[in-house]
Image (tube, rainbow, N blue to C red; front, side):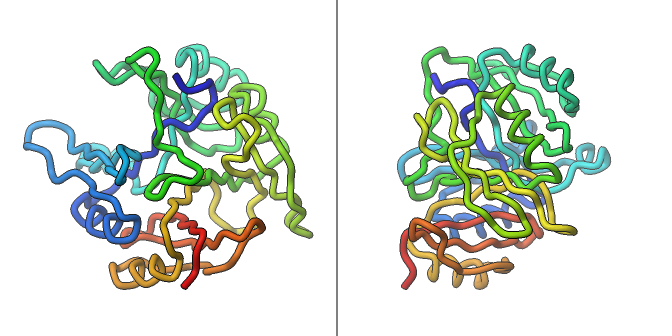
Length: 261
């Protein structure tokens, strides 16, 4: 079982699952499931070479009418979903989808932190099962979880108190403040991501970086598949290379790699 406060799932919400499959299969080396049989929710698994890395949910007309938009969302595994939802509300966050059960899958809820950044909390239905959707060094998996927020100090306090996500170092970024590295119970002190104050006018929220073998090849695939590179490639401390992209729907995502040809 994953420790409380660990990243256990990633979900792309999209208005065009077929287009998303074509793009991310090419860029990330995934094999997203084909369209399911009609009659139920269009939810497709993201398959990396070594197993599932997340899911893709097709928006329907009712969701769009209710204001849902394409985005990436992450799931934090928790010991008790209802207790976590109550704690989020008490700390100044909000509930967007009250806790509910999916038979055979688990109990989950969508919430946002006090700065308005959305995420899911979830407890899986199978006791003892461990998610490997997050893998720091696994190709085709989210390798880094980055929160850009309006108040980084408040965010670090919130996620630390409620989800045991702790600061394990930082990198100064001048006027932008610190890039604070974070770890959780599963990572045993190794950073799984970072929290930073978003520059004025910049998008906020949790962002996720998928690991691929080569950043130059990834950049070429992004551009050839209808996406756009909005930053990079540039090398980060430790030697890895990153690009920030938007997919054909304009959804932001990150790509990270140990190599640059």
